[in-house]
Length: 354
Image (tube, rainbow, N blue to C red; front, side, top):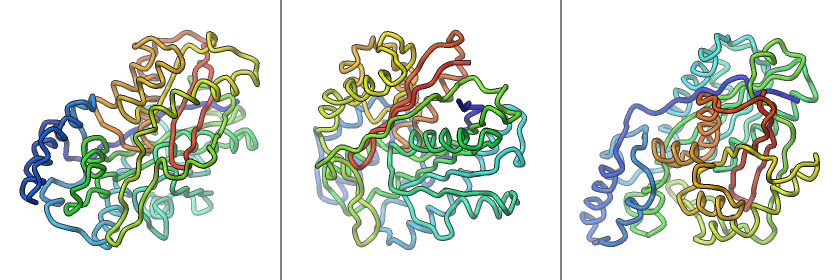
């Protein structure tokens, strides 16, 4: 097994109430000659109280070319990533020399060298640091990074891996796009970063961990490529997400959870905790319905959605952090980490409290 040692997070400086973003949307669309009226309900029904953005609202008043979006991404992704790493290390008194591998996850911008290379340079990390930049996983990225870190630290049990997931989702808002999908994205997504230290069982940090990662299950559904992802347009990325996502969750989540559990062997009633990426209210409700969960079972997911919105890949790590910090669990209790993303894909991890 491998263990989660700590999770650190970083939010941009600009914090907005959901009502403020709603007012911005109303004014923005009205100035463009479009009355959105009842469509504003998407803000009220999102279960979100506050969100964080790297730019102020006036940045979005005028169209931005790909160059401006890319420059904003690199600047803020690097800054947030450094803050998240420092937050993670400070939470347990760690230092930069304790990890040998960075798994960097993002889907909202492109940089070459990738942000992990910039981190090695800015933080003066070991120049022999292994790095695995992963792009295009969207909301499932944080969970996939946990799976890859688990596999690496099982193969090299003396090692430790730093996961960094950062997304600047606000860069996908286009001021001249008056579609419903652009409005829904504005009502739900936000910016943020998370860093997570994973240690193998022969690493000195292992004894400090409180969550044992046991195994994972990756699923990519056939004939579902149009469910979620990016449409590449002249000035950046535009969000694609199907209204059928909650239905897909209800139909498929239970069977893949069973698939992972029976490999051990365990049953649904053996799972005490669920760390689920909160894609949105309908997704959370679909999880609860599919797995027969009580409303409180996904309380951490609901809490993160309310305080931060959907930050894409870092979000599930925020949920994991809340679970670990609340510390309301006994030893040797089983749990499941879950997230969904483009592909259409799912990532599950089975864990046990330590």
